Image (cartoon, one colour):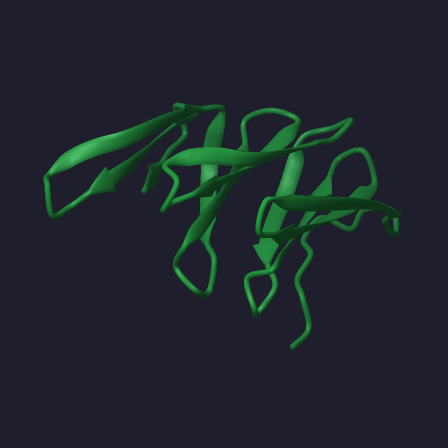
Length: 116
């Protein structure tokens, strides 16, 4: 996957040497530890989770401000995001099931991570 300042991300199949998906509004991206998903964010008020096996976006996490950070849990089952709106959100990713929870952040807190 490539992501850049122009807010366009491309996901490549290097074996076939082709782009398999293009996603708008993505400046930064992070792969899940299991390598099966990627979360992109940074150009708008959302984070998008892309499933590499299904070749599609499986979830969009909306925020009231720009998304500053998005991280996968060590077991790849959750994504944690933080935003300029002062909230963190955790989404659980299970087979065909998504659960979302909102949390308030400490003011001026931008980056988030999971503790293993």
